[in-house]
Image 1: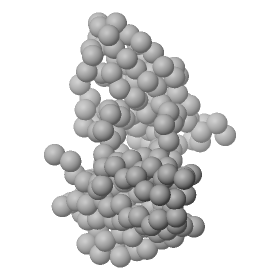
Image 2: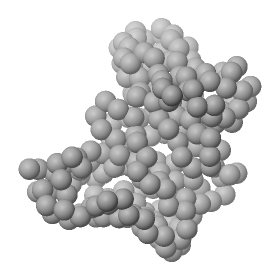
Image 3: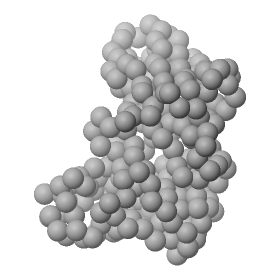
Image 4: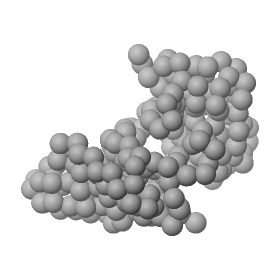
Length: 111
Length: 115
C-alpha cells in the first residue's frame, strides 16, 4: 500500500489564484482529514469526511472547500488564495477510532 | 485558546541524557496520541494511550496517560541523536461524538539531541 499520498509537494500561488490540493489513500479508510500546520502553531483541522459524500467543517474552514466523491480521494480547494493561507497542508485518514495516518504534506506559499 | 499545552517548546540536550516532555489540558480526552515529525514529512504515530493511568513503553520511550485523562508525558531514556525531531501530542476530546471530527493537537516540543 502507498498509504496517504498528496500532490503537489510544493506550490507557489499569487494572491487571488485558485488551486486544488490532492489527497488519495489506498487503505479503504472511511475517515479523511485536512489539517494545516503553521510555524510554531501545531496542526489545525480544516475539514473532515466520515465517508464518501459526507463532509464537515473543522476548526479553520474559511477560504477552503472540499468534496468526497469516492472513498479514496479527498481534494481540498482554495478558491481565492490569500497570504494567510501560506502553510503546510497535511491530509490524513483512518479506519479505526484512533490511529490517523498522515501524508507527506503540501507546502503552499501565497505571494 | 490552546486545548493541549506542550512543554517545553524547545529542548536541546546531550546524547545519553534523560528527558521528559509534557502535554497538559483542562479538558478530558478519550485518548491521547504522541507523534514524531521530522522536517519535510508528516507526523508519524508513536503510541496511543486510552486508559487513565496507562503506561506504555516503546524501547527507550515511556508514555503515560494521567489518571484524570487530562495530561500525558513522554520520557526518553539515554537520548540519542536519532531521537531529534518535533514531538506532538494529540487527543480525541471525550465528548466529541466518537472522535470522527479529528484530533486536537498541541504545538509540539522541538527536541535536539547533540552528539
